[in-house]
Length: 252
Image 1 (cartoon, rainbow, N blue to C red):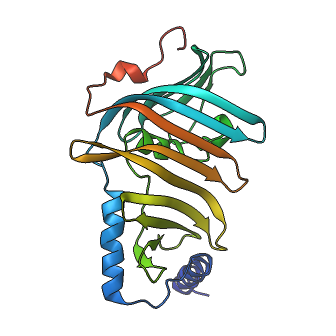
Image 2 (image 1 turned 135 degrees about the vertical axis):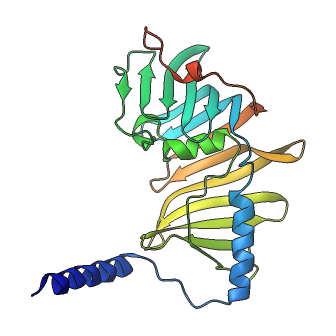
């Protein structure tokens, strides 16, 4: 086999594998697809102009280990910087610091030694019980909807209240559930077998000037574990010094 034939065969095999692993878009009405795309862009673009925020709130975790309730305080800067502190009974429990390159988890109770990830966008589930990547959590703390990149959008319900989003050559897809009285009701991430990896359900939005900020939401994973986050105070577009996202010499 010539080198060109071998190269062509490898490319063809790769395309076959990718198309086999990906999800095929069904036959749909292009005009309805355009409407679905527009609705999806409205949801994914919500509050994307917010680049920084500070805030406080509550986090209730229901995991296989039981129920835990924390107060939270944060400073965040798009797209990948955050300092998030969890406290209980007015004492700090855990701090997460992301400087855009790495993420450090600090226990204030001695539960674990300080740990710094090699990735700037780790999955938080093993650390906090929240089944999201750090970048998606930062979106939530900025008042945004963590819709991942996608290529195609189409309605999957006759009343146009559900939109499926898909990125080519992937085996996962997102689903948006719309509501008439708020920007979005739920965002789901599913696999090709329609099994839910996680669901973010939005219970309430607060209007702040021209913006609507999600202030009460629940994140549920495939095992039924839940994280309910309620925001009590929220300051968008507030100056945040870079030093906030740096660890002090004492490691805090």
